[in-house]
Image 1 (tube, rainbow, N blue to C red):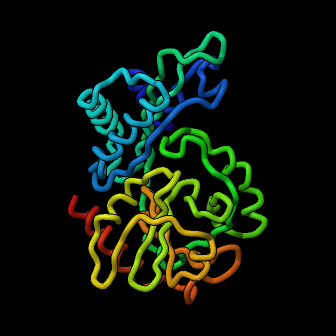
Image 2: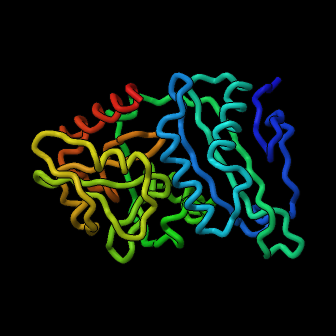
Length: 274
């Protein structure tokens, strides 16, 4: 019997009994935001950064969060104590609320979902492959619940045996559906700065120092990625993961590079020391 609990509008309920009405704008129109972080040994990693982004997303989407930051911390703590899962993920969701006409924003529903999660350390050596897709996310700086393109194209990825998509805007590299992208060329490590979601892991990499390299925000094109010495993605669940090929063409020598490996070790230590 599943005894995992979920937070819904101030109440802690069994996950398999958590409910929203069908009039919610998240169901009617796909209108809502969320944020997602992980817990390592019971510690919510970089939680203040995720709260910053969550509150900003709510503001941009004209959604009022009923809880202030202290109250949201209390809600999270209550759920964590109830579930008692040391290594897990935490998803905080804010919907458009129950709308009579299915079009107007009302009082948002706040849901917090916790699930077991263990980082897969072996995934670094395996790396991943990307398929470019010409698409610009609307409201790119907001973490909405809209993943229409990424989910719609999953059958195509499976058919081609490619791990994930890489969004670009007419050749200008943007991001992956759930991750930011970096390239290494010479002594520079670059990540796009225009029309993207600014990931929390990305922000930590931008302030990391590794010998011999400069890390900065700078837009680049698909051809720059194809000709890079190394490439990697950053995300809350994957940390840092090497990108080994783009559209079937090998990047660098097709193995995780030394800059990527150094950043990965530095980031893992940052989590450990948090």
